[in-house]
Image: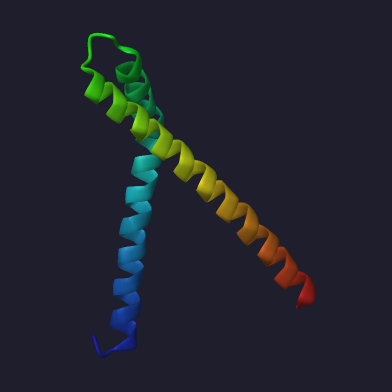
Length: 85
């Protein structure tokens, strides 16, 4: 790990792996939300499970809004920095 090239290659490999995980998670997000919605509304499912599904839905919704907000702010900062340069 003392070699910069090795550290850089490891860092790139880790970034690639995380990118792959993120893409796979995004690809399945719609299906996962469909499952949560179905469980939430199925009266035959125990109330505790329905509550957990609802909480999962809310958590996913909150995270999506938060990420969108961060992306918008980051874009604004990049534009501001670009204008100063």
